[in-house]
Image 1 (cartoon, rainbow, N blue to C red):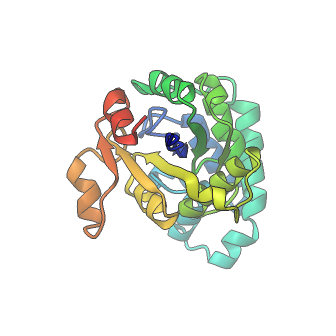
Image 2 (image 1 turned 30 degrees about the vertical axis):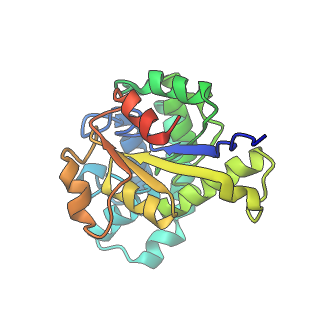
Image 3 (image 1 turned 45 degrees about the vertical axis):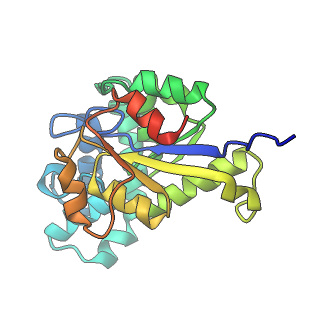
Length: 249
């Protein structure tokens, strides 16, 4: 008698700002202020996060963009980057960690509940510094859903962050990165920016775009990268059944 084929293990990584939590100009005030404060203290530059491109980027790259705009060389920037990241983290934890407003986007709790119930492994991939990212999720009561994550303090490349998160999940599950069992995993990344979809491509996983952040039209994802297309684009995460059907779970 033939045995039923075993369903592949599934990992889904989620971006935070604009995907799980409301992002935008009026969100993440404490997070932005912590970065601006560190830039001021370490390099003596008064600059704002809003003055440069920042959506979809890791915190170190945002800082780099702020300082380049003010004429700082890459040597000046990266020579002090670790110090600045530490100072930004400490300032956020001391000043904003317990009162930073967070808004969970529609459908998030319900979707994460369902995915956990169906045995999907969940991890975070975010450009936030690690302590700041976890604190946001704790305040939003989302932290328990995720077994691990990768953050802007781990690497500047979002594609590499997906790879790091995958390795950490595999380690938690007792699977070596070179193990043949890795081939039996389906892996997806959910995000709201073109950078999220590019990161998914770079990490050789399937991208799922949501129109709750920087990208507001389905076509924008395709127009930016005409040679490829996200696995799925959703208006928001209330479209749970559509996603579950495409995932086959």
